[in-house]
Image (cartoon, rainbow, N blue to C red; front, side, top):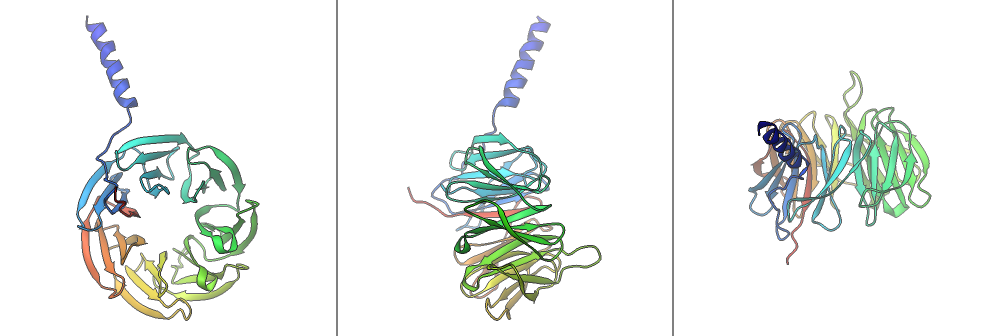
Length: 324
């Protein structure tokens, strides 16, 4: 009898461990800010209008980023130390799909029909379908870290963390057509189509701490300008009036005039800020050390609200509401 009970217990445990986690649903008619908290391995969801936390999803995997898919209701989760990518439906809180990948995924670019998955360890960008099938693998120079789209010039641009490089990939041939030098330990880029420019930021290397954002030509990759942005400019956003630069080494947020590169506004913000997004009329910053989201009015450039989230907010995404 005891042996039978023991085996039944094992079966129950195995079934429970294989059952996908179901989380608090996030209604489709709500505008939400999603936050990846890497210290506690969770996702926080904040109602954009009320600025109140709606739900927290405790994750079992070391997720570092969450990317919203074009349907507005599917979020894809991945991390550099994960060997799989997972999709969840926000409106049900249920897992939709997962598939195996090599460890080392640092960024994903979503297009209308496919995913571009950057793997820093493998030195590749994989073109995948939305159900995880690899259509093509593009070899890049070492340490690809992030990727942005430049549809005006029909190219994808890869920022390389090590060796100070930028790769330009032709969207049609899916091959690297050009590689140019940039700042060391670069982490992100911003395409400014109106001026045919790419803004690049990062940490700097060794004893040198990065104090400038580099501005490159989208046409030929050459360095056009160095814009003073102290210290460690790591995140960018833009409107027609300004290019926004977030510096996590100095807790500073800058607004630059896109053509002249002159500072329009500056604001001391957060504690070790790591991420920034532009929403309807606000900038939202993830303050890593204070475990908060900080809201900044785009027009007045003043802080309007702080919202407590999980420990170590590292990445943010925004999902606008869709009325049923």
